[in-house]
Image 1 (cartoon, one colour):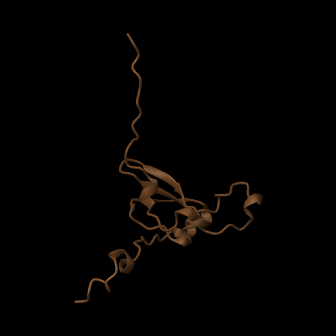
Image 2 (spheres, rainbow, N blue to C red):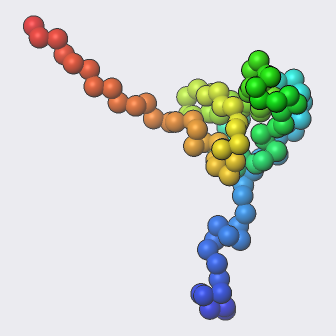
Image 3 (cartoon, helix red, strand yellow):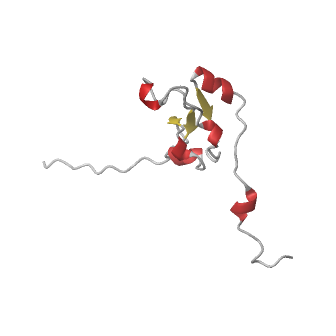
Length: 108
């Protein structure tokens, strides 16, 4: 058994979890969304895609980005992957709980 100072944390040797999406390339080419229930899938750099034109010349800057439909337990929430999302999980961007809204009651 190795001393605990040599052993690193579990996340260091475990590695990221990702699902092999078979239609990843054609979804990027056809600009269609990938429907998934895998909320624990890590967003990889190849999910972002590349921009063929400079950002200021594009009519829609997110047209060449990969789109997912992530299941939140009830519906599939649309999600467009950006560079800032790399390393996070898909489920972080699809909230599962409805936010509370305080409603005032009318005086009778």
